[in-house]
Image (tube, rainbow, N blue to C red; front, side, top):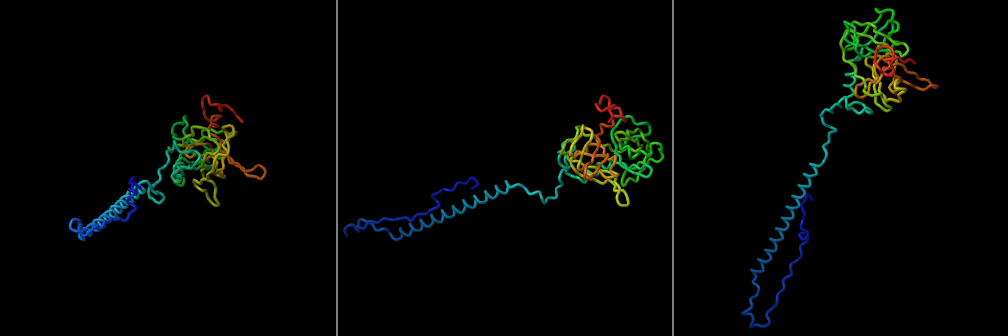
Length: 306
């Protein structure tokens, strides 16, 4: 009990037996004193006081031990944070577990959305995102990655291309088509606006990674800005095609597929669903930009085609 050891003999009180030898003869009455009554009363009183003192001591020891054990238990008990108002800290982007969602999904979505643009070409629309690539022409500040099929009708009609950004994509910026790769369904646009870039994942994705697809798919009557779907990497084919369980809808095309650290896994490109071939949602890896659109030096994909 809290480090206090109670003496075991205090737990039991035994009756006190008093012996008395009567005088052998009347002659001894004068020399042998009978126990005085007053003396006997004092002995019982002393015994009673002793018992009271023992009881008080036991009570004090028990109370002290109980209080000490209670304080120790309270100190040792883990605090309950399930109902606290303290905000859960966000995981640092460079250390977040890639197999689980970020700590604050709402803030995470807002962060990625800052890098998105709405691309309108003729009568169609799609998504694009800011990405760090060198080689911008004068008058432009940001490269936008998207799909070839999003801008194909604007290749010969530059005036039909419109790129918007900001809240609800109300801000239109000067833009021009930089280059495109029909075979790998990729395109690069340069814009005048300077918006946040999505960093690239330092490694290729692995099966099981948590991921998020985000873009501007078409709803019943209008676009669904920054619509998100979540899933996990199903498989990665030849370090080029990222199969994900996150649904890629029409209008998501050209948007990013990101991991739980907010890093780019790939560009949402196409999907299919059938009873014969099953369901697939595919984001092509950003390294495919090296095939035709940008110079990646000695990258293994450079110059290759499918």
